[in-house]
Image 1: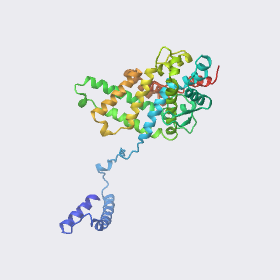
Image 2: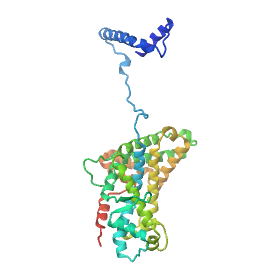
Image 3: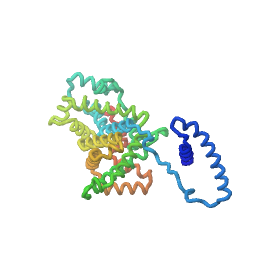
Image 4: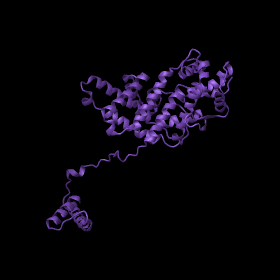
Length: 374
């Protein structure tokens, strides 16, 4: 119909009846009715006299998504980055379990003396009232429970083995999308090292597509109560680290030889489990994962295509892969294996790609047994 309308306008202009934006509305309605009647007649004639099909009958109209119309919640993705940071430090480094061990066993059995009044108040509120003061705002908040944290880790990242009810929708796609991002970034780095001119001859499309997929995935899954508990977990984590483990009295008595809060956590976890965690490595992993997801939240195709922005992102992913010691061959095998076995078999290997094991039955049982177990 549009080409026919154009011909009508051209014919009117040729007849010295100019059609403009101001008067076209008065002509176009009548023309449309006339064209519609003509097309109906032509269609009826063609259906009765010309049974042969034209090649245009087999054309399709693709239903591609327009990214300008896709609703992306950058706040939801940034919330996911904060939740990931709390998940790795709180559960994999066992900061929360170390805090429970410190208050319920270490202080009870040891000979530590608490002289600072504010430290006493903080411990009293945290242990006996299950409350703590947000180091940023000084608001008094309720402590989070291990089962709650594990449930939202499973909901947003499908990480851990927490039991959830039927109403919780698990993000089953995230573990594979995360592994694909690691794999495609590793492939890009390998090709860039072999290319004489990586800026021109090495395609970035697979990495960009992985970023877009993760951005949309987290935007749709890190919503609702996840936005509520993530700041609470982060505030409690900051309270435990800054107000307790970084306190001069705790540092002096737990690690007399000197050290940071990492050494405090290592000492407590060693006494609690008999194994020393790699605190600095896990912290670098938490920080790197947070940086990657925040970069995904701020993803914009035009900005991301710039060499400096893309180079910074790839460097962050490379450091993350190095921190976790993930080999490209092993990651490829893992992807192939998960693709062959289906989503059910892919879930256990997801923990290996993310490097996190929060919410496992063993950790949950250990945390439950620590409650004033003298």
